[in-house]
Length: 442
Image 1 (cartoon, rainbow, N blue to C red):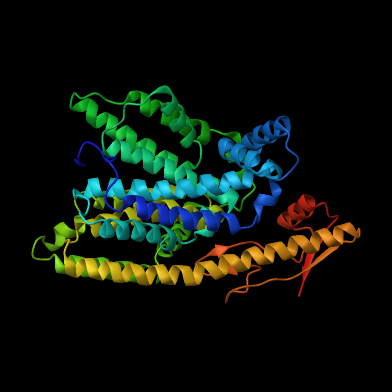
Image 2 (cartoon, rainbow, N blue to C red):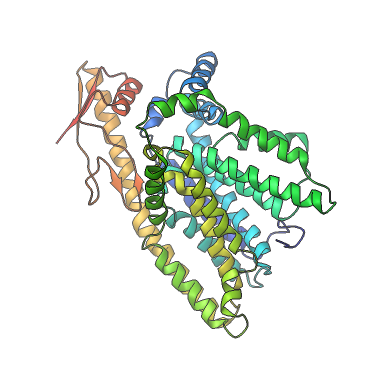
């Protein structure tokens, strides 16, 4: 890939307005999103020594994601002191930063300049945000759930930032940046390994051409990948799972790969397809699908999914495919930027974006507001019953056609209170609320 030398120029027309709109919505969404699932398992009186002991124990007996666990404990244990407010701000800023990185990197990879008019630029930023929200299989688990956002959104934003640096050949970094790269590499195993391989290829290519190779960057990221991968806890945890031979893992992976695509892709693909059709006289069909060098993102997405074979089938949760979805969004963004800039297509994009924004608000705002209300009611009822020294019984809440304990459209899934008082997540909720036991009834 040979994009321009820098992918972080001065703010593009419409960039500040578009990013500000994204940030405002994300601040609200993060603020109203309640704690759920593993969040309650990470809440306890703040004690740095206890946190360090648990993190060290997890590294040796459960997971190598020590930095992820450490950050999550600090966020949730400090919630009486306002840490959830800080998390809402930081998490919203990280998602907004991801939108910024994807737009600038894809504009460079596609070899296209920024639009002249600020409205066109603002619409493009909003479209990228909407694609990042609606095209992944699950968004609540990776962008709003506290434990999930730290474990998935944060490393994806960090690794995409690193990929953007590689694309723009801005690989010279100071010590603080190298430490940041090391920590980013300790979050998510397959994504960390993928970027280490990309860095290795970049370094070898530069070395063969007699150019200055970023060996220090490769070492810092590779060290993070190594510390993550050799953790004893990874192998202890794997032995607790159902044995999964290669054929079984491949079957699960194919199912995971196929479910990356759902009907929410249709409006975005149709809009971009109209743009490519309008520009057919300027760019041949195969060339337009390459989107400059954007086709590389498809290859990286497939490579990431292939690396998931390292996990047993039991561990292939929907949220694990989030990095692949972001890479596919990057490819669609490159295609969007190769579409011709003109009144016709600008009108199509503006009208389509307006409709998608309305759809987004009509679906997401009521759902998240309802989740916040359900959480408030459950917490209030639990505290009332705890004050009377009673075993806590809560009404069972189900949402959606699948009748999960708590389900919101587009896989914004929040685990509700289980009928079994011995369920791990229900026990975590009970402990966090000071209850002897908690269960739900119809």
